[in-house]
Amino acid sequence: MKEKMEAIKKAAFEKIEQAKNLDDLNDIKTSILGKKGELTQVLKGMKDVAPEDRPKVGQMVNEARASIEEFLEREKKELNAKIREEKMKNEVIDVTLPAKKLKTGHRHPNQIALDDLERVFVGMGYEVVEGPEVEYDKYNFELLNIPANHPAKDEQDTFYITKDILLRTQTSPVQARVMETGRMPIRIISPGRVFRSDEVDATHSPSFHQVEGLVIDKGITMADLKGTIDQWAKEFFGPETKTKFRPHHFPFTEPSAEADVTCFKCGGKGCRMCKGSGWIEILGCGMVHPKVLKDCGIDPEVYSGFAFGIGLERVTLLKYEIDDMRLLYENDERFLEQF
Image (cartoon, rainbow, N blue to C red; front, side):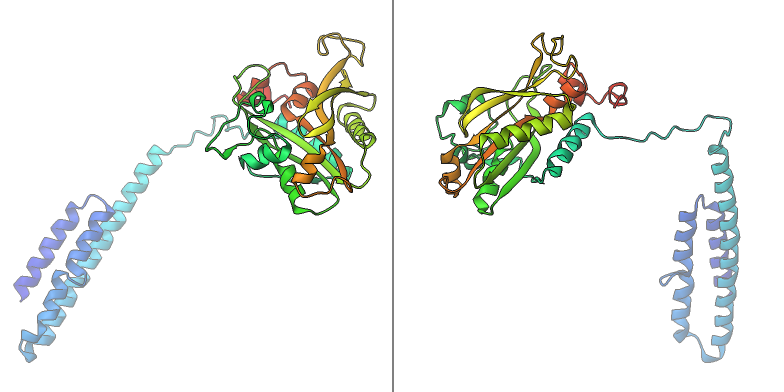
């Protein structure tokens, strides 16, 4: 038995000396001292040893275990020291090198314009409501008085997913969903991303943002709409801003109009930004069509309202005098850091 213990110790020491890393040492420890290790197997065979020899055999096994554990620990310390020394060589810090610059991000110009716009309308008592970007044809067109084969559908090149599901072309579906709830009065704005199959150029993109507004209550008139747009324009573009309305046609409003504001660069005198006219087209609006109210479950004999739609990128480009819409999405730090 003594010779067997010596052989186990010798083999263990040789394996430990040949170990190249800590994982090798752990494997050796398990193979010799683990539950299925060589020394453990010797102890399990004690039942075959004569009773008078068991104390001696037990003592020899324990001495062998102690010697192997001591050698393992010593070798482990030496390996750790080598690893640390190698790490120190490879991870030298040159304190003379300039420190890394920490760049702090800030709001995108679109977000700045949206925050300013929302602040104005929230201050007038509006609620900000959002809706799904993947929408039903029913909410995007039908409930807004744009049935199948309506010419207005040709004006909005739509991304259809199925016959009845599409990527919304406007945030007006949010208005239809809110009207369907029947909770009165309604005073909301609905900002969000919309999608149309447009070619990318300086003023168009297949993905852009809109902010649409809706007010429904008893006794709402065109005068309320004009006063609202006039107040927003003064707070958003400057207190000297004036507004005017031109007749237009939208299927979901009647009467409909397009609103212009005086050029905030030249004050209405005429310049490059307003193409010499002194006015800039800013949004579409109108009184909610009685059929839209009826289809959404609201009695047009009792309630009336107005709606408007603002292109977020458009007002951002105008407010910050940006010539090309593509600059907003190219992630060029030289451009974005100006805001």
